[in-house]
Picture (cartoon, rainbow, N blue to C red):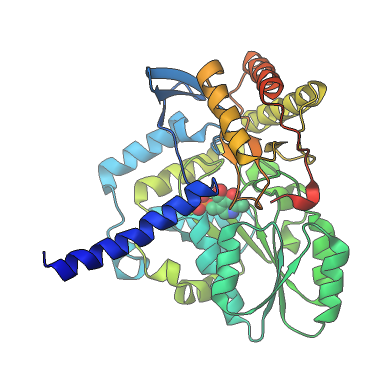
Length: 417
Ligand SMILES: Cc1ncc(COP(=O)(O)O)c(C=O)c1O
């Protein structure tokens, strides 16, 4: 390598080192720990601790109904890989469409009682590619976005190039005020049913009422609700009897369905347009058939079986009550994601390290950029498979680390994510 080439490379490497160090300095550096889930023993996993492998109980997985290890789901994946192979072999247009994708899209549309559905490789892509295409396709579209919307939605809205207005989290008066100010302009209201960080729930009915009054389109992200809420797992809109009043529903197959992939469901004309205009759909290889088969099995299973949902709801209620009794700062909301306010990310990390090393409990802290700077939470995701003893062990351990670290910050809804 010439001297100039070497100097050039070093200069570029400095940018990346600088970027990573900046994250280290403000404590937002991405640090994962190596935890291998144990097949058949959900929610236990093996942590590769400095002293060697150790069993730990997982309290931070999106797989809240244990579907990633369900025999029907695993069986469908294995069967399909044996007769269809591992990958789809192309984008949907080139040579990637197969029966599994079509069946899965039909099942999703039927689940949400919509005309059609379109699959993306993740929930993130569904929002970033799908939402941006939808907004772009409506001339002069204004997008009104809840301030706590997921980054994938924020990215989709930015990419659309449309005018955007942020409405204060779940604040209906503010939403109405913006709708009045922008009256006469084509408008899309983008929001989530259950917010990922705080676990609080949107006033879906009132948002639908405002949308109807002002002629706006509704785009609802149900990533944290599908599989878990509503009859057959169709989400919060279904649970509230509002599915028909939501124009567009987005969901993920990676949370309660335990697999991978994302989707948008709505009217046939919309889905048809998305297939040609959402670049993150058209220019990427299709989801592998085994993954589609597994997702299909998970959706079908959760449409028939409700014990997982009921057990999870019981566990959430028991845990919320026990945390409150123990004086721990659990956030408001009725969702199945529980947040404990810590405030300082360094303290939150130290608490999680102690929970793991001293109690064998795997929880992760949430800080910037998932939530605003100077806020941090411990997020607890109970599952249908945690038992009563595990709940008690968790609450006692949390109470102990709270005594040890004494974080003083309380949950502040206005400062939340
Ligand atoms: C609210 C919300 N939307 C979208 C996503 C992205 O979904 P996926 O993980 O399938 O990309 C997530 C992921 O956690 C989420 O919580």
